[in-house]
Image (cartoon, rainbow, N blue to C red; front, side, top):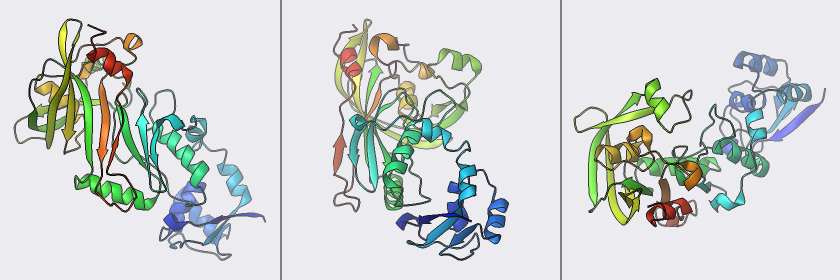
Length: 334
């Protein structure tokens, strides 16, 4: 019987063998995988092993060829295989630990039922092409959230060390995220908003009039209040410049969030009387995306990292906002 050999990498160390095998044999359930191990159709360093065996870097994992041939026709890989190559034009920073992209407009970060590959699937495909020798089990993934129509900086893990460090620093607020947003109305001074946010399910009527394409993706809005209900949200908003859109004042604002609540910027801006331009889910004016290139104006513009961090990240990464922002603020649409 012929076997294919796979060498465990650094990010596979101390992972259970059954967890690694599920990446190769996605169509098999755990009981089936344990049966294959008992039959010797999967081995480690030439010997039988249990599913709870802890793999070490350099271990030789052998899988019977006919199992891999069967698995390759499964559906798990179809999403990644259909994903477009990762465009070099959107790569802002990349090393062995972290990948930072300038996310384009109207592309989902996570897989969804909408047509087209998600950013996560595109990045995973790129990872498999360039890092396959580093790990058999590690999967890259986004390290924070951006809505489908939000543009700008988003980070993906490239190894286990990067994933753990970045996630921890996000939790302790040692990584700062700055956004640029076009708000309806004229914000004349810097504001600090502290509220409570709760998730709400959207009705069919609300979905129908919103700019959300994901009726079947579990989309929901949130409500903001000043009571003790919901999760605490802290947002700082500072005006940068002003413009006029269809006879109404608009403000380009710099937004700092120290908490990461769902739709935090969108909901708090609307609650305090300055909804994002085009954000119809929160009361914003509907925008013709064909005319202006997009119909939602929130951009993750800046990331700040601790000095002398172990991942080799610079202290700050900044990206320019899309030209459509300039078109609106510059008065072209006025």
